[in-house]
Image (cartoon, rainbow, N blue to C red; front, side):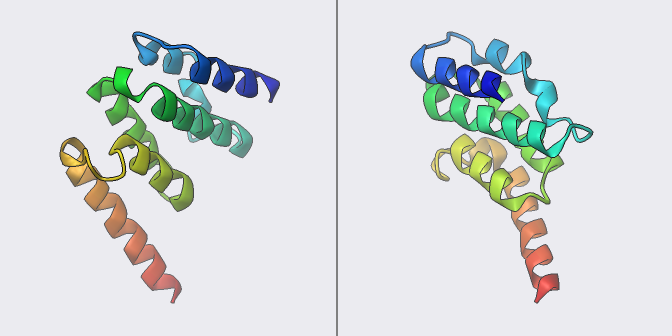
Length: 115
């Protein structure tokens, strides 16, 4: 998906006053009914927004990204990466404490069942 490469490059090179608009263009990529490739592209765009536009991300947008992680909680690697970026590696956890706790509990239980 060349579009995703170009979109991520644009996000990383330019500062946006409101990254919510940037996200709204592609938010349907992470719809549960989307193909795995589209979902992967959506996660990549979220990671790019959080990496390069974090200071402009309002709490509502970060909460939307946490919701995406909850929807796709079975994909632990991608979801945990988003939580790591949303919470700044756990330094800004307070607004998302309950969500992170629920996701971690789910992942622990899922891992335990596999053993």
